Length: 357
Ligand code: NAD
Image 1: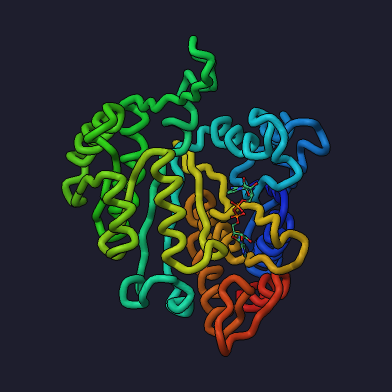
Image 2 (image 1 turned 45 degrees about the horizontal axis):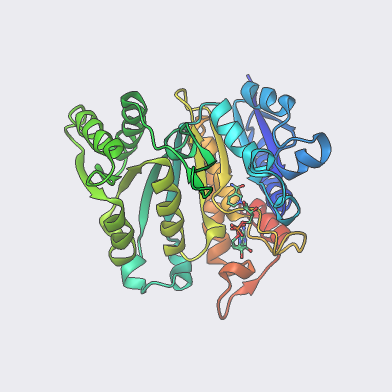
């Protein structure tokens, strides 16, 4: 039966990069027999402009019915003045929560062709291949109570709540251990157990889950040290698992080790491996509409979709080989451009990947 993919272009460079990823999906469908149908819907600022809210009910319903979702990015200057409760980013959080996408997988892989794009020394980053598993539907981004209140003194006080139930830590830890079993069999659980009781519990549960995976080596690290180690000696890590906020920060740090945010895909999965796939970068309003964005992170997100949700690993391999081929051929968008290479536009990069499939 054909699989249904919901396409959510979003804002800024979202529509440009998603167009290129859709070209790749269409080529796999038309030339290589991938059995898919694609639908499109609104999210983020585009949805606010059309409907008044960042996540229309029809979009959430279509997402719930789809087998997988491909998202560009949301947000932009135009909507920055809106109340936080109806900003474009709320559309994303709503999708994650509404689909129960609790596991965010963010690989940080350094393509050898781009070793000189990293700000770190080549010997520190060459061969880098880390998988960061970030908890995505809990923790301080969702915890209640939250808000800004006025104290008796008249001063305002902002507050958020960090909460994790054992079951939430258990399921995200299992995702990390399962992935580690297919890699180098090492998990580093990142917390701040010396200061935060909530993550003391996190450490306890991660250790308990680790007992079920005797072949995987489990280590624990405080988040401040993890940030330092990521830039000091990143190759020491295989799989890292951590809370929503720590994962948000550490995965952006890991992304920069690879030189460009325009190269890195991500997956957000539910209990049944249904997922939403998106590049890790935002809507890049500074370059939107200029046909300059790097579409490879979005195209590689399609590859993750084929691997994790659609059970089509050979198609995923085909995309990854095509991306390697265009990099080998010296094609670069401006964000990864270096001397002696050929600078290409967003759509030319997409066309080159399709041709290399
Ligand atoms: P950003 O990731 O959009 O941009 C950071 C820098 O990286 C910019 O200089 C941008 O031009 C560049 N960049 C990003 N993606 C690129 C690509 N594919 N090719 C080439 N260059 C690229 O982050 P930001 O500037 O902090 O945020 C811009 C908007 O995006 C904000 O509204 C923010 O809330 C939103 N945002 C959305 C998501 C998402 O949709 N998942 C994630 C992060 C930020």
